[in-house]
Every structure is written in structure tokens, then in C-alpha cells.
Length: 457
Image (cartoon, rainbow, N blue to C red):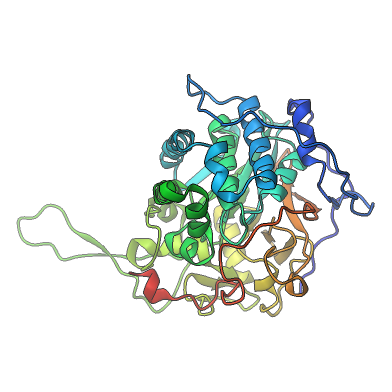
């Protein structure tokens, strides 16, 4: 079993980012944070007066977001989570402001390719850093701490979020909307990829749909539909600095095409997909770019196979490429496939997410998620890394069954952006008390054995 590499002893981040207004600083003061770059014990939360945000939040008249607007949204969501019942969220963010935010973000996301490139052409330079974030699952307060700890997005600080913004945690809606706001504010510095939980099926099982209906009540169905529409636009993967591939689940298969026989007099030959092949092989970036990402749920077949693989696949220590029978969707791939993928595409790293401590305890030969990341494959061309950014997961589990794991994020630094620096952190405590939006005692936490029949309806 491969163990995580020792964490870095120091992380140097640029200081150009303007800090949030001083009145907003207090909402981070309850963080019980222990970064791996420090040997100190977790900080004891120090109570402090909670600043009151400017609410209700309205959309700017000129449609242009500012740092002050986004940090006030962070403050408002944090304040609301501690002082208001869930059904009062519209008093913080009215539906009209929600609509404008989601519409603006959706237009940006739908224009991005399936695989976004973050390179010199998009502003990546010798002073830049790229922060890669794994699953956050509606843990709003941990996401806000992570943003503060890593430094807010800026001209020289890029963020790539690897999906799974919603479900299980109590603040999936606020988490997703906050990240959309950062995307709208800094569209070329914040990249939001899709996770398997950004789907109609998962959100109906793991709590997000019920959360939205509880918070926006009579307008809840409208808000939920708008979120699903936004999910459809989330890109599937990214390539950073021409050396790092990131995606929620991982790599994907090739889908052979079979030219159909053409009738006499017909100039155009019909091309049909032929997924029924006995031997699986790795797909190409060209195939990834052509995949149809707008589908929200299975059946994962035909053109939907590649998105299904990217969102649901898992690594294995067993060589080869095979169907992921445990999940019923996606692939399992071994170190040989990691090597082939990296070598063929001239890459150094694969960074994926998708597996928390619950999933990893059932995966022989692979490391656990105690510190928020694992190095799963080390091959001649590079490494495969899993990063998970939701500490103390799942937060609604019975106390004795919670994993007490740390979350983590990864910093990629110049000149080549292919040497990962790991930062682990503990959960923000105390959390506001709130009831879960899903039956965590009956729902399988590792997404295994999904009801595929209901997903296809």
C-alpha cells in the first residue's frame, strides 16, 4: 500500500491578493485548523462577535461582481447558517438574486470546453499558483476556511475545484452558489469541474434536492431546476500547465466508431458508436472534447460513456482497465493505465477526487484518507493522486461512526506546476446545529450498488 508523501514543511503563497474587508475577518475565527505545514496542535476556537452582513443581497445594477460583493456573500451565508432557520435563506439571497447569479454563471460554464486548459494562454505565469480542491460536499464552513487558508483567487492564484459541491453536508446550496460567485467574479481564475453528485439522481438520494426545497419552500422546485441546469454546464476535466490532468473520477475509455454502410447515391456516411467491444482501451483528449456533457443521469451508453467514466471511475492496484462493478458505473484502472495515460499525453500528474474515507476503507491496497489525500500510483512518468477536501466526513454520521479525517488541498507551483504541495486541515468547529437532509443511516456512503434502474427513468 502506498502511503502519502510527507507533507511540505512550508508553503509560500503570493501576497498580492487584497484581503477581505476587516469586518469580514471574524467569520473565519472559529476555524479549528491544523495545516500540515505547521507542527502545532489545532487552535481552540475563540468566540467573537459575529459581524452582520448586508442583507438581503441584491444583484449589482451593472451586473459586475466585486470582491466586496463576494466576501459579503460569504459573510451572509456564514451568518445565516448560525442565526436563521433554513427556510429563511431567501431573506439572505432572494430568488431574484439567485436567478441572476446562476444564469450568469451558467452562460460562462456552458461556453467552456469539456476539458479546460490552464496555461500561459490563460494567464498562468512564473508567479502563479494553482490550488486544486477535492470533494467538499456542502461543508460550507470548511470551504470558507480553505479559501482563506489558501488565499482568495487572484490574478496569480488559480483554483480548480474537482466537483461534488453538494449532497450530504447541510449547506450544499450555499457552497455551490458561493463558488459560482467566485467563478463569475474571476472567470479566468476559478474553474469548477463536475462531480458525480452534480446529477439529478444523486441529489435526490443524498440530500441536495430536499435541502433546496426546505430553504426556498414554494420556490424550491424552481431553484432546484436552475441548479440542475447549471450542473449540465460544468466542464469535465482540466489540464494545468500542460502537465497535470484533473477530473473528479479519473481517466476514461475510448469509444470506437463504426462506419455504417452507405446507400448508393449518398455522399455522407453515417458514423455510429460501437461501445460493445470486448477489450477496453484508454480514450484520447479528442474523444473527451467531443463527449456530450449535458446529460445529468444514465443510461451511460453511447456518447454518455466518457462522461460516466470521468465522473465515476476509480483507481486500482490491479493492472488493466475493467468495468467498475462495485459502483456499477465507470472503470477501474491500474498503474499500467496511469503510466500509459501520462506517457501518451506527456503529463506528470493525474489529480482526482471522488473517494472519501468511507470508500477507501473498502479498497484493498490503496491508502486511506486520514490526511485528505493519497498517492495511489507511482509510475515512471509520474503519479496519480486522490485529494478529498471534506474533513470530519460525513458530518451527519453518528459521532462514533464519523471518520475524523482531515481535508486537504493541493498547491501546484511554478515553473512546471507538476510538483504537488499538500495542505491538510481539520474541520471548522463548532458547526451550527441543523438536521440532515438525507437518511444517512440507510444511504450507502460510498455510492456503491446504486439503483441504476431508477437512474435511467
